[in-house]
Image (cartoon, rainbow, N blue to C red):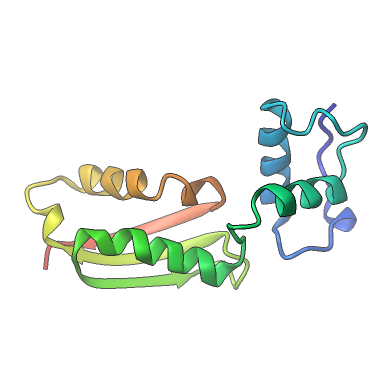
Length: 132
């Protein structure tokens, strides 16, 4: 059975809400059902075994975002971690000709599609888009 973690139970670089979201998602997808008890250490060991090629650090997440958004041939791309270093919130200032003729909503949807995997671990993201 899934049990939420409390802040005093977790000492990690992963924010508590991200850990709870990840635990819930993995549990409902039957990925963690083989554990008798779903605890912090089981989840971290599962992450280390199964996601060793991907890292949860803020700098690498910002680099992944930059890499994916660079495919739009940007003329300006500024990515800021607005969460204080934990990687939970980002602000992105992006300019590209790919936005030409698109509404603001279409531009944001385009960015969300590109960052689909990254958005699974980010709590909030803010876009400032332009066509320059």
